[in-house]
Amino acid sequence: MKNISPKIIITVFLFSCHSNNQPAIAETDSANQNPLNTVSPYRSDIKPDPIAEYSEKVNDNLNDWHFSVKLYETKKTFYYLIRMEYEELKAEDTLKLPNLGLMPKPAIEKGKDKYSCVLGFMDVQNKFNEYKLVHVEKGDIKLTTLKHYYGAVYTK
Image (cartoon, rainbow, N blue to C red; front, side):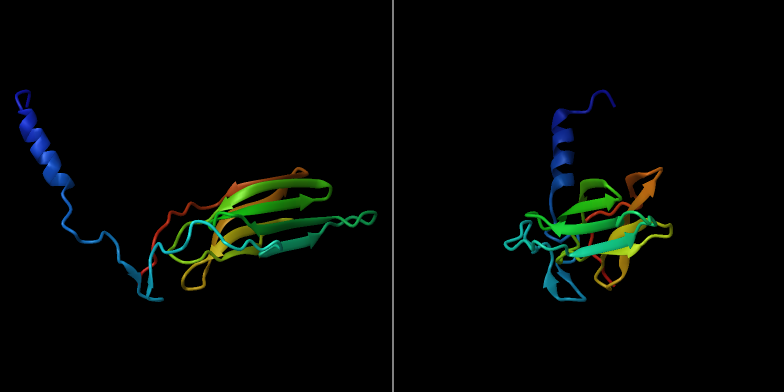
């Protein structure tokens, strides 16, 4: 093993890196017949209104407080601004959705607990995929990652 020629190592390396001109993944989404990775990384038109939101009134007789979460578009196509509110607390963060080869469809669903909701996205089969949990813990707003996603293509 010690006397392996550098030429042999380089030759093996070159052959292992050689492409056989076959795509590693399908070049079109069979469900939509759209070329993949054609979604622009930047938006040309950013909507000022929330594109998804959830709100729940806080049980307080003296104040008109809410637990609310709103998602806003940003300049980057797969990034969304999260604005969270609970009573007088306000917080912001960023939600990055995976690139599935089509425009992202962020969504919010009610969580299991009071003052909670799940941030996620709709996939190509229009199924909700949970991603992050926004909830109140000891009077604070918490954002917890539930699952991890990678830019992947759904195929049949």
